[in-house]
Length: 289
Image (cartoon, rainbow, N blue to C red; front, side, top):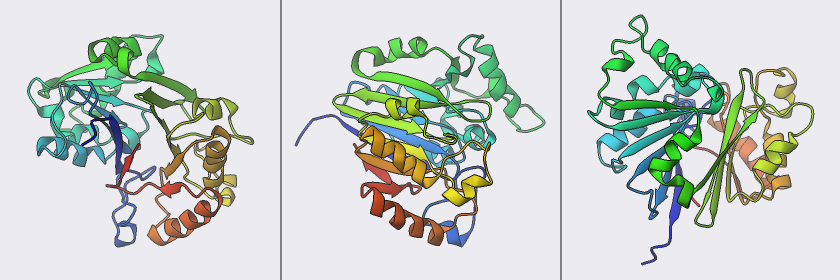
């Protein structure tokens, strides 16, 4: 059996804006944004669990850690694109936050020029007594807040084995794309992004030659016309980024809460006619890189 490193992404939440619970949304799922990157058979495999965003999908991810579906690691690293409600609302329901002694790092470069206290305040506020019965300082885990990648890269040895980068892109209040390169593989997470009248060239370069690009695609071109300034991309814009950046696999995410399974299946087929290796992210689906 080959021991070559394998990276695997699992989608735990792919819905945008607000969770949806309805029979017509079962195929693609109703939980908001949360992805797990499994760095299989690498030095980081047992050391760190890598998570992107903490929408409602993170609840099931936490259950999978609790039940051993995902092996427990020394560190859990959660990287945030931004802090709109649909990207943080699942964190208070993340089971490992209550594991005594579990190390959890919450990372965002939003406040790079300020104290990490500002980042901590966001989660303190979310879990204050008016909103949640357990306050952040009462959970069992050791929750740390980092705004500088070097703070957590060194203990995880990420500076040795994996090149970790981020890029600020256009979204109300700003948001960040993330890219990980290592062991001959590359994955880009690029959600909650508004390109504007033309495609953001810096985003294209950030995604250049990626093996897997996960890109925001909340709207049709027609819908986008009435949602300028809302901070999201159209299906065709996401495909254009993938085409121009020579991306190998494209997964579209952040599905609009008004787009049911029938709608998404139809648009997915249209997108695949233009970019054959394009798929719409489905909750629970796994992608091997």
